[in-house]
Amino acid sequence: MDKLVLGKDGSWSLFSQRWGEGYHSRIGAYTETQMIYGRACIEWMQKHPNPKSVHVVELGFGLGYGFAVANQFMNSFSPSVLRSYTGYELKKPQMMPPLPQFIGWLTAYRSQLYQDHAVSIRGVSNRLIMGDINCMWDSQNVDILFWDAFSPRRAPECWNSDLFARVFQCMNQNACLVTFSASKKIRHSLESVGFVVDALPLAGPKREGTLAWRSD
Ligand SMILES: C[S@@+](CC[C@H](N)C(=O)[O-])C[C@H]1O[C@@H](n2cnc3c(N)ncnc32)[C@H](O)[C@@H]1O
Image (cartoon, rainbow, N blue to C red; front, top):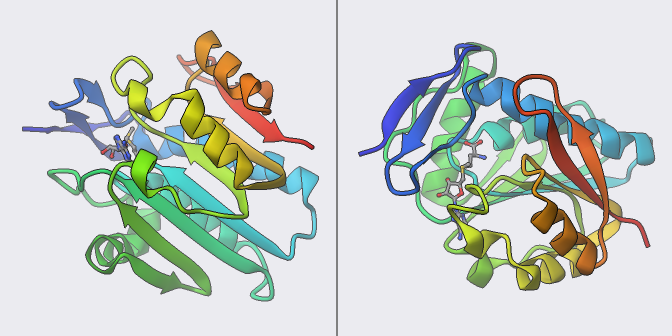
């Protein structure tokens, strides 16, 4: 049975018995998601100050923190910008603790997404694809890709070069893949399929993530 974990920032997460790993680090699910994935959205914006569209994709929908951060980010654009989010998830978590109060309004949409696999929120089209990403990947024109699988040690099937090569081909110019992992092996694998890899400096106990650009 998975265990509920309360992060230092007061947001709820889970420890997965099956994977032997937490869904988030101890600093808290929301803080960690903002620090890594929210930060990548800002980095992307700096390269695309007036986008016509933005498509955020996430591996590992889980408890929906990435989905919440992506929707918060996309809500900052005018309605004329075409905005969409696609999440991939192998299996719905055993428990679904509520999102923090200030993003609590997204909790019901998270449930709807698990039930119906598609929902429109304030002009953002959201969809959720259930199954193994290796079989289910179907996204095109990706701008920002949150790579939030369990760690390469626990879930190596989510970190292979074949998969990275496939997703690279589906990314727009100056699109980015962002992940919490700073593993040299993963960075090398990303470079080998064409990404230009940068370190993503982080505050807190985990000092670096990875930001990989499709820059051609
Ligand atoms: C670290 S958690 C993601 C946390 C999530 N981003 C959130 O905000 O709550 C990793 C997630 O990846 C999912 N996962 C594991 N293997 C997968 C696969 N092969 N394809 C798709 N999702 C997978 C797990 O079920 C889990 O929900």
